[in-house]
Amino acid sequence: MVKSKVKFGFVLSVVLLSAQVGLSEVTVAEKGPVGDHPWPSGSRVVIDFPTRFMWWQDPPMGGGRYHFHYRCTTTDQFNEALEAFGAIQADRLELIVHGASGGENHWVLTVWDDEVWKSNMDLIEPSTPLFLPSSLRPPPAPRIDLYAGGPCFLVWEDVIVPPNVTVVDRRTGPANLKQEIDRLKEEVARLRAEVRQLQDLVLQLFQQIGWR
Image (cartoon, rainbow, N blue to C red; front, side):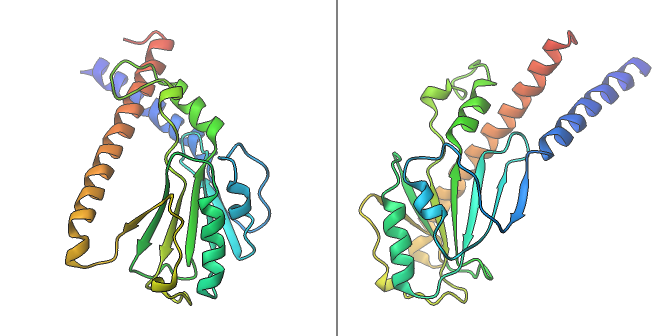
């Protein structure tokens, strides 16, 4: 019993230490300029859009996912940003439309640092089909979250969406129910993948220190 408690305490200490180290990778509520990073080509134009007022990055274990927050004063202004977004060179671009208010966050751009994504993926041994080499697992698509239900001076019917941008409508209503169900299924699959990834990282850590 004592031996089991010691092992449990050691495991808990390692997990907590890993979490503390990871938290140092999170940057929050930065209002100033952001340096250059290997984002998908064309991202910088949208990132530096003049209505940006804040940016931050996550996740806690490694960072690399950047969130840029913007205000919107006219539909034409948002269309200008959306046109630049459509010029980003990526396999997929997403525009997520929310019916709720985002407060002063009228729209948010989320984009990954490609090099950080690849380095994170390279830490995982492809022991299961879920974990593929980084060359076969591209970063999540750059996305814009638009909060159309808030104090955003925007008329959705006048928004011009580039043909290569996929619109995901999350506003409430029966017509969007199936789409929301599909989105939740994808989110559950993503969370399961992240849990498995964390489990593999902890296992590799134990193997490195010779603990069985």
